[in-house]
Length: 165
Image (cartoon, rainbow, N blue to C red; front, side, top):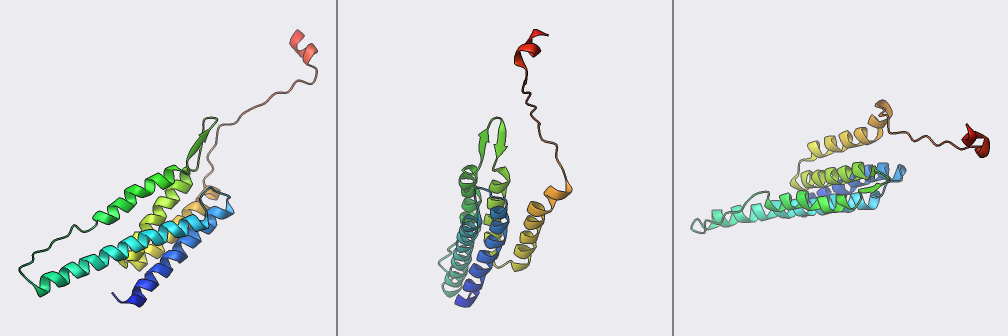
């Protein structure tokens, strides 16, 4: 893989993280554009590194048949997927029996997956995945209304007369 292709992959990771992060920023969510870009680029770097390691291993085995070096494809990428859960968990909080930040955590996990896809060179699925995430985050909330728990607060104007009844 040439240096310019590595650069292209990183730039696409920045773009995808930026697009999803801007949507989160618009909604004033805990993890915004910078966080999403950093997660996507970091995942992309890991995927590029893993792709380069595989190419180096294949070259070593072709040049010297007696080495028999083997690698486990996807092992480092799997650590990104599980490790991003800790960052996502930091965006989730519970206050007054209401959960907030769950969608942001899910978008961070998706951005990590998209970064891995970009880093591995799967551009079509990366762009399609980015579009699906944006559609899900921006349009689905407008189309599907979920009734949340409503709280009713009653204030007494004439407290003494009301209690007498």
